[in-house]
Length: 333
Image 1: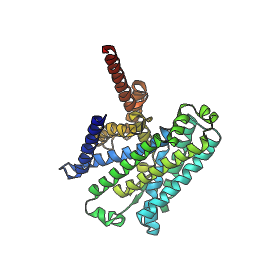
Image 2: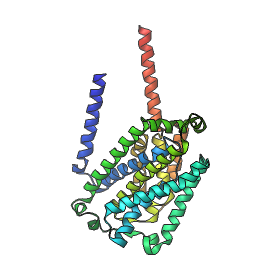
Image 3: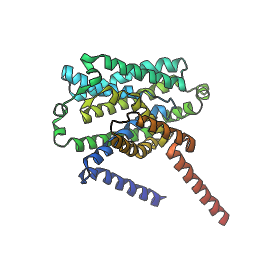
């Protein structure tokens, strides 16, 4: 047992060292950009799994929260010259208010399953067209440009390296939080809601309370991801942060990796991000709908081959191997 813990510690330490030294390697700029996007997607998917995986309240409207987080920084900076930190705080608070405005009536009156998913999609579409129509504030379809020097003088030193370490810290914080939630009393309540909502309510679980907390927490973390998007790209457009493609991407990666596991969404992002970024770079802007098509095809394949995602498939395989090993050991004795 001590040997297993020692090996696990060495593996984690080696992984941490590799992650820390990646910016020091002579990587092409595009490859380094893809690595940053990988961590960014893994962060968003880990935030999504709190409500979409643990509680099985599948949302296809998380682009709304990404957009609010991003536009809060852009709009408040351009109109009121507020610092990105204050803009990010305002964005998180606004996102939680929007999440509660959506979640309370839905959860209070029993909107669940595909109907809740459609409600989140409707919210995303409404937010998209609201942002596009407010040209004087949001820049409309053209978006908002944020000069990097305005955000932070530190970014002028080496924007990609600083952004890399920021998103790595954000990702590991979200991963730690997701793990703590899944193994806490709150996480057990969410699991009960996921497995059988009516039975959980009959056992005394406050369904409305815990679903609202999960949705609010997920939305707040996602808004922070939107704030990072604004800082990293320095250019915000409705299609970049509010399009349904963003929501489908987050949900597809999470479900493909395994939404029942705290580490599953990160696995999905690790597998899908390099593939989709490569396809996007090869096709350029010639076939705009191809990424959405790929997400749909991947989701169908995973749903058919591994309903619990890649993480669920690996866990079940390791479980069968361990079970077979225990049986063989028992037969010897």
